[in-house]
Structures are given as structure tokens and as C-alpha cells.
Amino acid sequence: MLGCYDFCGHYEWTFEWLRARRGEPLVREYWDKAIAQDSQTHAAARIAAKGIAGMKEYWGHTLDHEAAGYHCTTTDNVFRIDMHECPSKGFLIRNGLEQYRDYCDHCMGWIGPMLKRAGFVVDHQHNHCGKCWWEIRAASDTTPPSAPGELSGEHDVRLRTDWTQAPPLDTYSRANDPDDKTG
Amino acid sequence: MPSDASSLPYTDSKPVGAADFYLAINATFRFVLGRFGIAGLREYWTGLGAKYFAPVSARWSAGGPAAVAEYWRAFFAAEPGAEVEVDEGTDAVTLDVKVCPAIKHLRAQGREIVPCFCQHCYFISEAMAAPAGLTVRIEGGNGACRQTFLHRDAATAPQDFARIKEATC
Image (cartoon, rainbow over all chains, first blue to last red; front, side):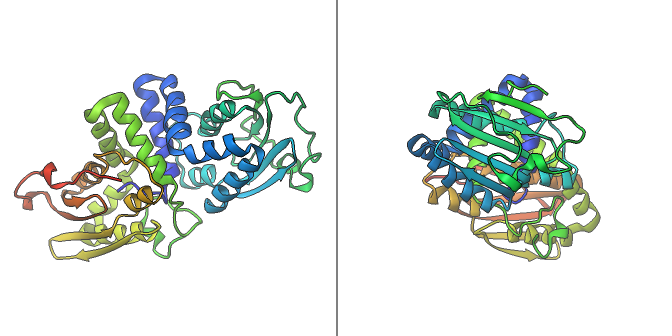
């Protein structure tokens, strides 16, 4: 049986299985169709209906269940996550699992398109070592991302001494697409 | 981490998995089935068993039926909602799956389950078992089943897929 305990391991293995057969476009299609529009329909429905309040409900529940080390900051206009210990990437690192070239892309791969359909864009950085931050705003809101510490204070992952380390950060600005990054 | 996590090839800091990942497993099967057909889905499952689970095969090769039983006890201890009895006999290990945690959660969440969902247990386990000189036979499914791991030369007939039920909501 395929279990949920080590899900992130066979999930990451699946990315490379798909890529090896029909290339990166199939991996992107998988994240959107299978994850955003099938597996995570409960997230999409909640966020489409409630906006930022729905994000708070969904990620609060999900990240608690996955035993993540994270902090959420919510205002009327922005939802921010500071991920200090990604349970998913952390599992892969601890177990030496790396089949696909950049596992971290999967989050933007399904969350980005889901948020686009709900009318939101994302500012985001991940450091490939289990740490990242997200700021999600309405697509009509042109406010730039916050400066380190400005929005989430001491919880801001960018204030950590181990935030910037090799490999380089991937950066997304008002994005909804996993390939819309500078790194 | 489960108390007997050392029997698992990959371990986490949490005691059990997050059940919502069963939703993604089911969705992944549906996606692969839609793009590659049933032959492609079976190839995907076989690849998982042969490659991703290769460390399990190695332990089974070294440890025989005791290692098989030890693995499945640890595995189901980390799956939320599972009710499974593992019986280690002289020549075979039998899993009496009274409550399949995946089917249980998919039903609780009102999800459409891929009809051939239960076949994944055969194809993945068979690919894990073969390098260790073992094979698996499955009977039942759709929430409860019986899985028997035995030596390949002790199997009198190939798996009869008619004995693996289609999964329903």
C-alpha cells in the first residue's frame, strides 16, 4: 500500500516519473489538475468563498496536521506565511530523497493556479532548505512585498541567519506560475 | 516518529501521516490513469515498488518473512485510522486489513475513488516482493482485504484480478 506517512517521498518521486515521460509541462499539469483541482478542492473552495479568512482556516489546519514549524500573519489585505521548518522538504532532506530537480516548485505549482482562479497573486521566496515565505494579496492590490520584519516581526524567516545559504533563493513577484521566478 | 519506525525505509518526526494525503494519492492515480491508461498506471505502481521502495526489498531479502511482518506492522502503525492484523507464519505473512485507512478517509471526505484504486497494493507490493524471492496475493478490497506474502515458488497461480474489488465511494 502507498501510505500517507511518507507521502512527500513518493510524491517527489512521481514528479520525476512524469517529467521523464512527457517533460516539464506534464509536471505542471499534474500540480494544477491533480493537486489543485482534484486533491485540494477543499482548499480552493474555501479560499474562493472566504478569501484571506479561508487561507487562514486552510493553512492553519493543514500545516498543524503536517507538524510544520511556521507562523501565519493575517491583515485585511494580506496573508503571510513564514515557513521555518517545512515538514515536506524537511522529510526529503532527512531521508536523502531527491529525484526531481526542484521539489519546492510544487507549492507554487498548485497554489499559484488555485489562487489565480480566486483572484490573488503571490510574492514568495524559498531557499531550498525548508524555509520560505509567502505574501498573498488580491490581484488588484499593487502593494509590494513587505521588508524583512515589517509584517511578521520576529517571526519573519528572512531574519534568520540561515535564511540565505547555498543554493540560491528562488524569488517570485506577483506570481501564479511555478516557472515565473528569478533565482 | 512511530515506536518501531526503524523498520520503515523513510522516517519522519511525526508519529502518523496526515490523512489528507490520501486525497492526493487518489488524485495522482486518476491523473496517471487519464494520461497513460491502465497500462501506464500499472507501470507507475511497479516503478514505485521497484525503485522508491527498493530499500524495503533489500530488508526483505535479508530478513525474510520476519522482516516482511515487521515492515507492515510499522507501516500501518503510521497510517491514521488503519486497523490491520499482521500474522507471521512459517511460510507466509498475512495482512488482515480490517479497515483500509485510505478508503476510509476518501469516503469520509466524499471523494470519488478511482475504481482500480485497490490494485495499487498488488502492483507495488509485487514489485517490492519480487527481488526478495517473494510474491503477493490479494483478495478483497474496497475498504477491507487480505494480503498474503509468500515465496514465489509456493504460489500456485498468478494473481486473479477478479478477486480484487473495485473501490467505490
